[in-house]
Length: 275
Picture 1 (cartoon, helix red, strand yellow):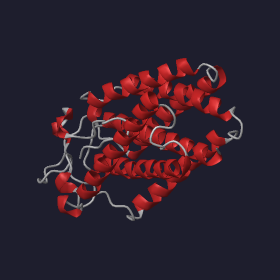
Picture 2: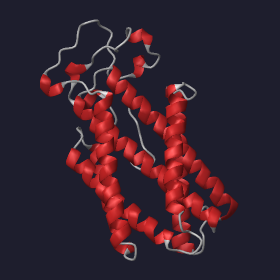
Picture 3: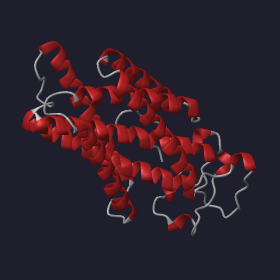
Picture 4: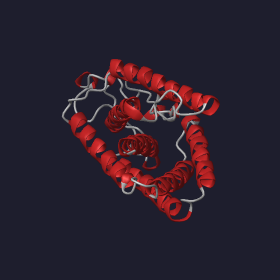
């Protein structure tokens, strides 16, 4: 299954990763035991036992957790630097954000995950978020807004994880198509709004303030939450069907990008509510 992200159209686990020899059967039951196995790149219809070498052992949940923690830790360190030293230098922070976006796109189109590239993205994205959050925190009536956004992001993550594990939310092909279409529409409207703000002045189409801004922010948070379910499914499939260990870096990258998306939407939503 390929997965996309609201910010980056990243490559997910797929047959073209160069690991054709590691399509292991699911850990419990045959292919028919998983309703998504037919569309999963790691599923196979034979019962031949997988052949692994020490250099290419399949990834585990521990691998995903450790690399996600490492990536998010790097982002947090960058955020601390941005908050402490760049709150008054938003121009530099915006440059770091643009550089992070470029690195994210580069990783999205690479055939294999690049840990240095992913960590560089996390560091630069952290600098941007830290400086932006620190600047916002210093404004009247906005003190504490970044912390509220962090807590809101954590709440969305835990809620979606529970909903996914209890199968309240099921990731299917129809779910994925709907999410892709909805996200493309959301991003397109956001870009149009920015163009109206740049060339028309004011608040553009009104997506950044008032009742319409609140609705738009809620939609953004919901889309981010649904992408978390897609990320969880990607991790689950990769583990069940023997994805190579290095693919855990892609899982960490995807989860980090999604959490950044949710945080930004939370921060914007809280800012509108406090304004």
